Amino acid sequence: MTFLTDMEIASQVEMRPIKDVAHALELHEDDYDLYGKYKAKLNAFELEKMQDRPDGKLILVTAITPTPAGEGKTTTSVGLSDGLSKIGKKPMLALREPSLGPVFGMKGGAAGGGYAQVVPMEDINLHFTGDFHAISAANNLLAALLDNHIHHGNALQIDSRRITWKRVVDMNDRQLRHIVSGLHGKVNGVPREDGFDITVASEIMAILCLANGIVDLKGKIRQIIVGYNYQGEPVTAGDLKAEGALTALLKEAIHPNLVQTLEHTPALIHGGPFANIAHGCNSVLATKMALKYADYTVTEAGFGADLGAEKFIDIKCRLADIKPDAVVLVATIRALKMHGGVGKAELEPENVAAVLAGLPNLEKHLANMQEVVGLPVVVAINKYPTDTVAELKAVEEACQERGVDVVLSEVWEKGGDGAIALAEKVVELAERPNDFRFAYELEDSIEEKLTKIVQKVYGGAQVTLTPSARRELLELERLGFAQYPICMAKTQYSLSDNPTLIGAPKDFTVTIRQLKVSAGAGFIVALTGNIMTMPGLPKSPAAERIDVDAQGVVSGLF
Image (cartoon, rainbow, N blue to C red):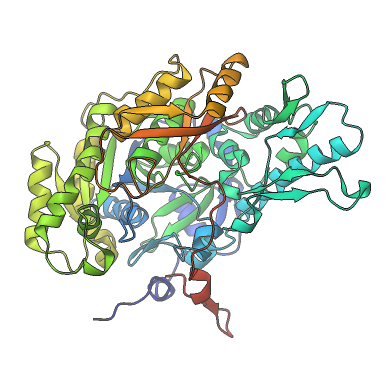
C-alpha cells in the first residue's frame, strides 16, 4: 500500500488567506502584520489590552520516551485541535518552531504529518518568518561585542579563559563544537578557545520564549552573563551596553507567528524546540495570546514527558503563571515494542509480549503526570496500520489499572475526524479539578532540585556531580542563583542520562558534569552524561533527500 507524502498532502489542500483566519479570531488589520498570503505575525502588544478576557483551557501534549519508531506528538497536537473544532469548540494551537538542524539532519520536517499538519509546511520547516535567524544574529552580535571589547583594551577585565558565551548557527555542525578563534595577528582579535552551539540552545532563544513583552525582553537580555572577570565576578550583556541593539534585532521576532492547520484551525508557532538541551517550550506570549483567543489552547513541549513536560511545568508555568488543565500523553505501539527490546526492523509482526515489556515506560510517564505534578491525563495511541487488536488491548488494560483512559488517535489518516473521541475526552478531563504542583520548590538547594528531578521524574537513585560541577555549584550559590529553577540537558532517548537504557530503568545515577547559569532566562542549565549543545548530522542526513524542482516546489520534507 502506498501513501501520499506529507508534502503531497499539504500541497493538495487549499489554504485560506491568513487574513481570513485572523478575521475568524475577530482580529483587526492593525492587530497583525502579513508575511505573504498565508503567514502573519500577531502584535504581541495586544496582549495587554486583553487582560480582562478570561483564559481558555490549556491542554499540554507530551509523549513517552522517544524512539526511532516515532511517536507523533506534533501530529497529535494538530489533529486534536482540529478534533476540538469538529465537536464545536473554539481551539487554537500553540506550537514550537522547527529548527533547520534536525530538518536537514534526522527529521526532514516538524510540522505534523499526514492529514494533521500545519501549513504552509515547507515555509514553517525552512526559514518561516526569520525568527531563528534574528535569534542567531542577536546571539552573535553579543559575541562580537564581547570579543571587540577585549580587543580594544578590555576595560571590564574579562578573563578570556572564563568566557561562557558561545556563537551559534541553526544547523547541526559538529565541526564547530570546539574551535580556536582570533588567530593570525593582533588585527584579528585576541586568540582564545571558542565554540558554537546550535541556535535553539542559545539563551536568546529561551529569553525570547519566556519574555512577557519587549521591555521584559530587554531586561532579561541585560542580565545575560557572558563570562567572568579576573576577580571571578560575572560580566553581563548590560556591562557591554548590548541590550538595546540585541532587542532591536529581536523586535519583530518577539511577535508570535499565525498560520493554520490543513483544516484551517488557527495555529501560533513561535520559538522553543529542543527540550533535551534547552527549555523546549514555545513562547509565553504565544501561549498567553492563544488562551485569550480560544476556548482550548493545545500546546506541546519537546521530547518525552521527563524533559519537555517537566520543563513546561517547572520553568514555563512558574515564570508565566499559567497551569495546564489536562495532559495528553502520546504513545505508539511501535515505540512501546522498541522499549520492550524489539529492533526497528522487527516492529510489524504482532508482538504482545514486547508491548507488555515496553509498558513500564508509559506507566512511568503517567505516574509523573498524575502523582508528581497532579494533572489529569489521557493516553493517545497514535495508530499505525500494523497495530493489532491484541496489542492495543494490552495497552488499554494496563492504563485502566491506573485509572487512565486510552483513546485511539487516527489523525494521521483522518485529520480532525480521527481525533473526535480524543477531543471529547480532553474536554471532560479539563473540567475536572486537579492538584497541580511542581516537581520541586524554588527554595530547595540546587542539589536538592537536581535530586528531586532525578528521583521523582526520572525514577533514578541519585545524582553525582563531577568535581568541576561541584565547584560550579558553589560558585552559583555564592553569586545568588540558588533559587533559580533547573533546566536539565539530558538525552531524550532514556529516562536516565544513558541513551542505551530504554524502557523504565531504576536505581541509576545521573552524572552532572557542568552547571551554568542562564541569568537572563532565569534558570540553571545542568548538563548530564554526554549530552552536547551542538548536534552533528547523521551518516545519511535528510538533506540528501530534499530537493526543489523548476517550479520551486520543495520535495523530501517528509
